Amino acid sequence: PGNAIAEATHWSLLALSLLFALLCGTLASRIVRPVVHKIIEKSTSKIDDVLLNDDVLRSACRIIPAIVFLFLAPLSFEGKRPDELAYVLIERASDIYLTVMILSLINHILNNLTRLSTVHDRLRDHYIVGLVQFLKLVLFCLGAIIVVAIVINRSPLSLIAGLGAAATVMMLLFRDSIVGLVAGIQLNVNDMLKPGDWITINKLGVDGVVQKVSLTTVKVLNFDNTIATIPPSILVSD
Image (tube, rainbow, N blue to C red; front, side, top):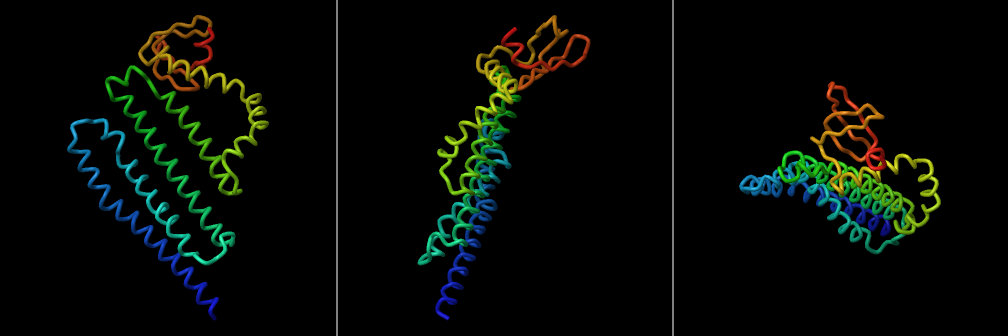
């Protein structure tokens, strides 16, 4: 009976911890988020209106329950073995949720940075869509590694070190894509090309205005209103 009562106490505390964490997230969404909205509306700068829009604030509020629950959950299992299956599963699920929510928040911020670059006068000439795409690629790769490391209970650094051989094979398989990716970064970082520039590539029949520059393609509107997409590597090498 004593063990049953102790077990019920642990699970009751865990349920209360979860409810309290969800309550903190709800309060942040219902109280803190509107206050931040009012502060942003009163500011004269338009940058915060784009960077701290409702998507970003909602994502930030979703992180709060995970942090609170990760702090309270170990207290609920106090006195039990840390390697017990239930405790391990709950801890890993919470870590994965927190990781995904942080990735979602950063992704929303990067999306807003792209939107800002299209409306802000100083950033419009320095097209940063390609750089944001590269950052997203790095972000999701790191996120996937962290999630896998949590599932198999290994350090992300050791997992990255173990991917050395696989990375070599991937480089051989996706050589053209990697070359295009590096070329796209060069175009953006060195400001070699931006929307509005007129370019001519005779051997490809390209002669028109650049519409969009990304990491993998350059979109050109030709003088005859046809659309051409060019790999960035051609613009760098030729």
